[in-house]
Image 1 (cartoon, rainbow, N blue to C red):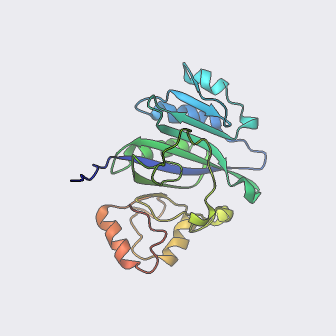
Image 2 (image 1 turned 180 degrees about the vertical axis):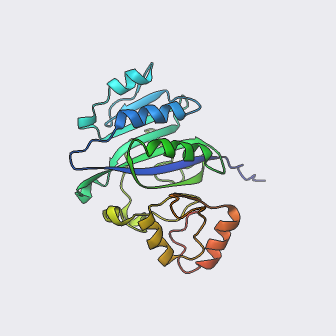
Image 3 (image 1 turned 135 degrees about the vertical axis):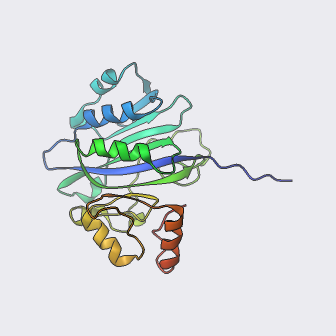
Length: 236
């Protein structure tokens, strides 16, 4: 007899922040704010694909990161599970803005309360173009969001997945979106574009709200109302 594996979930959130021209991302401030927000601080880190190291304090870690030649930071828990990445992304588009992806893995919370709180802090530190969150099975890779494959080596890279985006990052200044998720951070421009493509999207208390979170009932309504355009609706 075969028994179905019990599923365990955590919150996966990806935020896309950007800087213009010579403007530098406040990487150290973002990192300090993010690490302080974790219930359990990460134990290991890797910068620019180099060997993983442990660290004793946030200040020590920050001093190791040179913003000028920064490409990617990956941080792991004691059990080798990924907790945080901050990476330059979509560099191949050669845009006038530099886009960064902040990936967060946190304990399961249906309402994404911790993520909402953290985003409010980010808004004082950087420009947020877009973000989304979902409840991901713990046997899935946070980077690819697909089921993990057995490997002797840990993945230490982030590949832009152009084809998965509904409104591509090259449209950054007029609103971008990868799809529709349980948790969404949309600019007004992005929301306007999405509303022309999908019905039953409005779940905001105010038109100025950037964060839209869909309950299970609202998710079902959206799915039922958009049967012909399900490819970019990613509630599960």
